[in-house]
Structures are given as structure tokens and as C-alpha cells.
Image 1 (tube, rainbow, N blue to C red):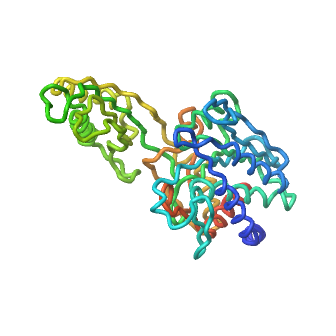
Image 2: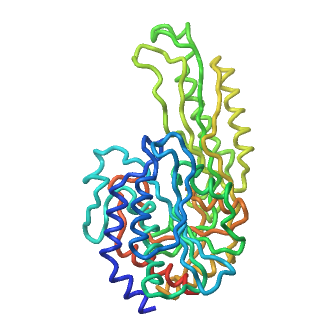
Image 3: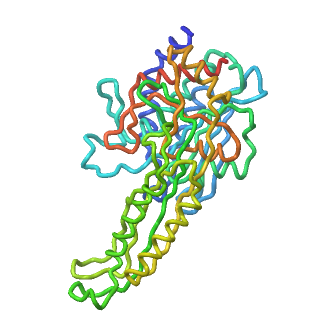
Length: 404
């Protein structure tokens, strides 16, 4: 234990260096106006090779929208003393856009070190987990020690936009995982590193298109106001929180949420009543409610609006995700809990979350996965930061996990 902690404490500057390198290369999906993960994956792969990782498999998911023509994921293997099961640590390469730059106090793509924190887009989500896992494995590589079981570091593309070109592509086209594998996803947690996420709310993203009849702002009687109809429909959909009203203390908040979010531009002038209006819903639904029941209620709400306003409503669902929970006594939960206790004296507890992770994609196929990390929950925020001490702390936990 002391050797692990001493080794990783001495790697702080190198951890910071890797964070700076990764942050300097934006890896944003086309949906966010970016060009994908290729340049960032290139830099990461080069760093891994320079630091002694020799078994690296690169998988390219074709995507004609990006200049490279594909979206890369990397699998780094560290052979263990035993290969009856593998220990996977899965982090994602991509990041979200910066949002309003006026809310940042520094360049999002240049890491700023301040008071033990690293500030920049992606430093926590999900580079902290990526860097921690790389250095946990580096302990075994540089000390020429074989971990107890074969370790697989999986760095995937496209986590922030549904994983079509990331973990879902791998699961569809390759047979990497075994049912007994330990799968850890360092992409969520709390400031103490105590909570282990074993369940997720079902996720439903809805694109709602309301089509009416455009007319002059002074003559609403001669048109059908799509904006007005859309506003009322968004409120109706939001009120479904009262219909799907069960609670589950595993989650925070402990109820299902139905929230209107993004709205597309409709007309260019104040004096035009729009004939089309498009808005989006982000719904996080407790696992006890199948999404088919939710979309059926969407249709009923739409029918009410169509009848009242004489408009047409259509739905698209950019993301629909349902997954079972990982059992509290699953090996990944037991082994991670043991590692936290051994490394830091932490007594862990299991929780559920409303956000989506790649864990859902695995659980749906029968693979037990746990999401955990020590972080301040800075994902997608301006001035996103991570604490250097948390990178080290999580690396220690993972290194202990690899030894069991």
C-alpha cells in the first residue's frame, strides 16, 4: 500500500501534464459543432506508448461527419497473473462544448492550475477518470508487477451524445466482455469518493415539432400559432411528473423529471406568428416506468394540443435509454468497496443517478458495471475543475483494485 501511494504521489506533475495535453485538444462530437476525437486519441495513444504501454488496440467507428472519417476508441491491456476475468476501467475521450465563453474566467482549452485545482473543459469529465486509471496501471508497468487479474483500460468515443460511435459500436461489433468481468466507470461520484452508482434513471430525450400556419403578428385569426401551441404542450409534458409520481430514495432527486430544455429558432421577426416551432424535452424517469408508457402519454398530450390549436405534433427521440440495476452484492461492488476501505478507510454506499453513463449500455446486456469517482461534480459547467489530490486518490483506489 505504501509503495502504491508513494509512487502515485510522485506522479502528480505527470498527471497534471497529461491533463494539460488532453485539454489542449478539443474532442467534441459533430452534434456540438466539433470534429470528433481523432486528434485527442492520437495524442493519448502516443503518450501511452511513450510510457511503456505496449498492448494498445485502436478501434475506429465510421462516421462521415468528421474529417478523419471515424471515431476512435482505445483498449489498453496490462496482462495479469490470472485471466479468468478481466478488470475494466472505462473512461470517455470526448467532452462537451464550452457553452457561453463569457462565463469562463480563463481559456477553456488551456489548463490553469490554482489552489490545487486544474481548470479547463474536460479536466473532470472525464479526463480525471482517464488519467487516474492510466497512472494506476502505470504503477504496474513501471514497477514490472503483474496485477492480480488482467487489466483493460477502455477509452471510448461519443459518450456525451449517446455512444453510437463509442461503447455501443464496440458492443455491437466485438465480443470483448465476459459476464464475470469487473467493470468500473470513473465518471460520477461525490467529493468523498464514497458513493458507488449502481442504477440510472431511464433517459428520454424528445424533439417535439409543432406545425401550424404562419401569419402576420396582427392577424392571429388567419393562422395557427405553433409557438403558442408548443408552449402549452411543453407545460403539459412537464406536468407528467405528477402522473409518473413514484419515488425511490436511491436517486436524487427521488422522482421522475420531465423538463423542457432546448428550443430551436423559428421566425426572424417579432411581427410574424410562426407556423413551426421545435423544442426539446429531457426526461429522467425512474426505472419502474418503461419508456413505452411515457411516450404513450406524450402522444395523448399531443392529441389534446392538436385538437385545441389545429396544429400537427410529431416526436423524434434522439436518446432512449433503459437499463437494469447492478446488484448491491455484485463482485464489482464488493471489490471496489474493499479497495476503498483498504486504500482510504472509506465505507462506501450504493446510489442511483439521474444522469446517463455508458454503464447503462453494459447493464442492458447483462454486464454488471459500477460508476464511481472522487469529484466535485463539475461536469459541463463553466470553469470546470478537478482537484489534483482526487486524481491521485482515485489512482490509488484503482491500483489497489488491480491488486486484488
